[in-house]
Amino acid sequence: MQNKRFVEADLNREFSIDRLKRVAAVLDGNGNDDAASASSCDVATEFCSTDEERNLMLGASLPHEALRAREIEALLGPKILAESNTLSSSSSHDVDGNSVVPEDEGEEDTNPAPLADIVIDLHTTTCNMGISLIIPEGDALMSAAAAYVMHSCRAKYGYPHVQILMHALPKRKHRMNLSSCGRHGFTVEVGPVPQGVLRHDVVEKTEAALHSLLEFLHLRNLELENEKDAQTKEKDEGASRHSNVVEGDATDHTPPTTTVLDRLRRLYPGGTVPCYRSAPAVRPGELSGKISWPTDPTNPNFPAVVVHKSVQDRDFEPLRVGDPLFLSLDGKVIPYYGSHGEEV
Image (cartoon, rainbow, N blue to C red):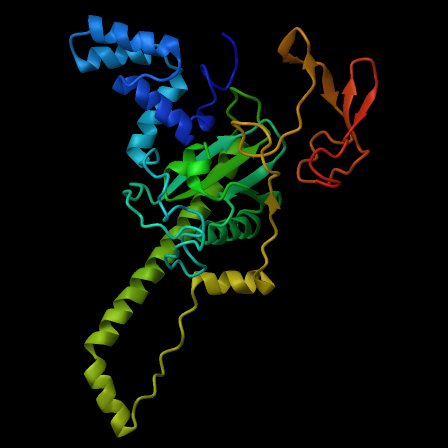
């Protein structure tokens, strides 16, 4: 059996608006510009007696991951209806978790909010990325969560190689990964591990990141509930407090509560959290910019070069123009030519 990470297509690229619409159009019988898909719709309509049989026949003409993405989106979304949704994960909360409508999106929100507040996607990778916390740019709540998880994994669990990576696509409608189905998305990617292999240490690192994230969300939810209760209590006791003020006995000796966000501000002076930002995508279907790996002209799955030893396993380290990048099979060094900037 061939060892690959998907059946027919990459599931984590099937959640774009265009791809979800295409699958929905085929299953709904609306067809599309693809003549083969339109023909499949006609055949299914003619020979199937029930909608269930018809959808099964149509589904056979679509990639397995495309169908699965549509099913997941229906459970966690909707996303396919959210093209004008102003409450997307792009700056939907400020640092204190309050709802904020981005300045460039002033249109009225007419679509339902996602069923899932947060979608957490767990990944392994063949790259030496350590524990990588991937969040959308502009989501303050997930930024705070990532800062908490990074510190917790390092200080509490003893894993030094933890970093935050921001995708350069802030709006959920523009992202095509699983975590974009929810109002907020958080991806944990841990490596290196070969495909098809389950490593004990990688599982433990993933658990550490997941437990830290759930801990942050639990603490933040408790704080928001306590704030809500306190506001209600203050409103109910307004008259009594006013009476105490008149009598000169209004001093509140209750010590101020330290929130999880207060702790993060102390851990990261100046409010600056070190993170990496992915290069903007230059090709359709990509979440971020990538350097094409030269392949054999007769087989795109067979590499024509190897990664240079000076770069191998050195993820998240600077790469500058002129640095060795690849080594051809005849021993020629191929340098980085600056396709994504002087230094990346």
